[in-house]
Image (cartoon, rainbow, N blue to C red; front, side, top):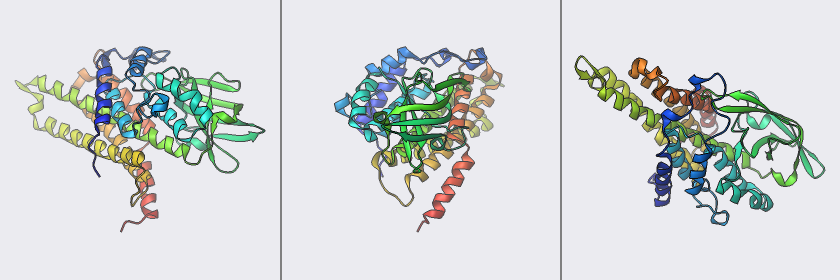
Length: 377
């Protein structure tokens, strides 16, 4: 395999770096400054900038105003966004739109995709189940009622739900299949209960009480939820990589300037060893991310299914991003806890990503099951 990025993928990353260049991490609302949500909405000005740079339509076909790129390109852009803690639903909206394109009906695609690519329509995904630990597709039921579907259930920690136009909700049917319903948050029978992330951003517990959904707004194609879930996972790993990269750079700059006993602390062996370990973490996070993104983008077969590559990427991302920010806090000393310095924001965002990815032990168990089911050699 060759992980060399194409010219189009590199151009997307460069365009993203240009848009995010004006975002100051120390200006991102801090969860330390309030006990409630840090803001009522995401960064609409940045969202408009992403739309103007055609970065909201990366995965969409030219027919919908998109560039027709793949998961690798999206992950490259997400990596750049996390370096500056960009407060936008880039992952959720892009992944949802790509799923509609790949699995939705023509009427749904025509109604949504061009608007989503322009940033006029914001999509998000309910992907954490009822508690955050159970499968999302089992938290909501979907039953047929004439020419419509009816949804009942609860999804927790839905990002940007208070500001999105539509929420993609996985639900299971009596036939033990998973469908994806596009639900307007203000629809009758829908209740959003505010939850607050470690980042200070508003999440929502989404409660559905006999919510009727038109057939055209439900995707019932096989594999739709699995593909969306995998893309969200790879995207979250890309966010962890970008955040960790920015934190390690910040730590390197600080320890190179901070002196003790007349020498920069970066020259001390104990400091050098810790930062070297974190560098190794980032390289492992990077390699496993691109492997997983490549499997999603190419659909290539392997000795193990793509779920194994995603499990390995999640193991490194959830553990790695935690170790990077913990080491950064340690090497910054008390300065790392200063709320006027951006490191504490990165720490809060890293914790959110770690929780979103789930514990490494669970992914290791899943990987073990895959290895047992698909013996190597």
